[in-house]
Image 1: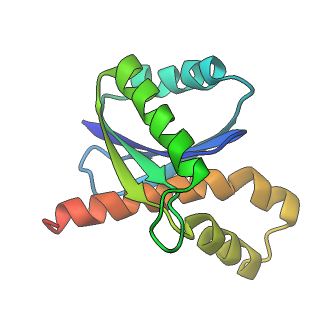
Image 2: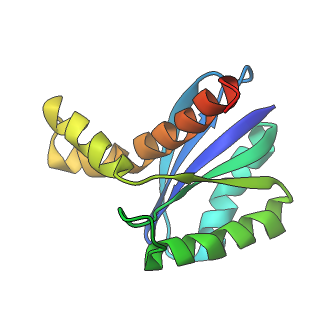
Length: 139
């Protein structure tokens, strides 16, 4: 059993997958897509390759806790995931996740071009790791 973590955006979707012990999240890919069907077709590969039991989806709520436009679109994406994969989708607060990852990459002297390539999959990994840590601590 594994859990997939997704950082959904309008042009890209970061993907991370847990190990079988549900302890470690690993960044896998940043998917660039033009249509929803293209994104879902690319995600099919992970659902077919790994035994995905749950989906953890980053929820981009505003800093004050209110629902953002992006969050509304993410909820629509959640519905598509449930319909396609028939798996539980857990929404995780992702406030500032991409900012934190981007700042870590800047501190590591990663070029802007390379940051753009990896920030979403790293953000997905942070989102998934947060879920795994909470689950393993009984929270």
